[in-house]
Length: 141
Length: 110
View 1 (spheres, rainbow over the protein chains, first blue to last red):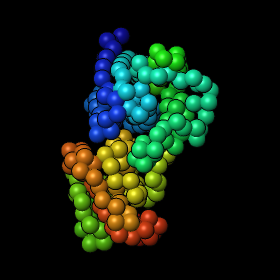
View 2 (tube, rainbow over the protein chains, first blue to last red):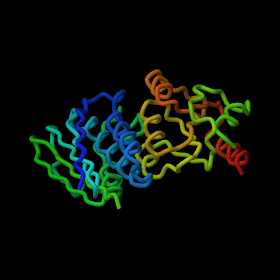
View 3 (cartoon, one colour):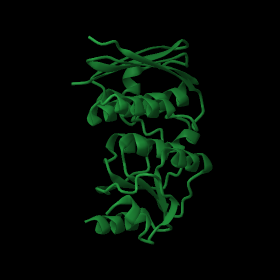
View 4 (cartoon, helix red, strand yellow):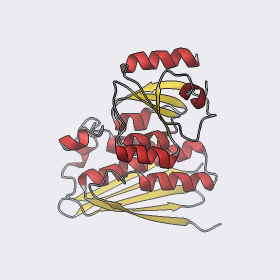
């Protein structure tokens, strides 16, 4: 069994000029590793949505991506305000994004639903006032 | 029709020609909400939108769409243009409404 590859990204808060950089970098690296196109697309979408959420809601955070023989695991951890009602936040169309973010084309309430849809395993843990950690796994097979 | 041929058709203002000029345009996609574009964007599509910012370029690249066509005279903002140049992404623009542009490209590629 070969070793896993770990990539770590610091995401800045409220900086839309850099949002998506981590996802783009992971996409490029997975391409170089010869990962199947459909898998890359799933990882890209799930991670980009998470990255944008961190920028919008949590003043940034850290994304750790581990590529193993069997899957790509993304752990997105922030120390933002936390999510009071996860079930509600997971509802398609529900959004708490501010007006300036909506004007950029976000805030359709699709972020978390997209993340769940495009990952094979999805877990979210959040504590109000402490932060949120989202773990997503996309299988390579 | 390739991205380069669409650039050379004279029908659109070429904001950034990009590096992927030999790529075949396979579809037309219209959407202004980036989260929906993110999940529904069609690979190799010409994406017609009025969102001209850096995130539009990121979504295009992540979903493997072929190019962005900005409608209604919308301009790509400076960070978006810089990103498009850096990524080698094709960006065109037109004064026309989204539907008219989409129909025109659809006819060109059909």
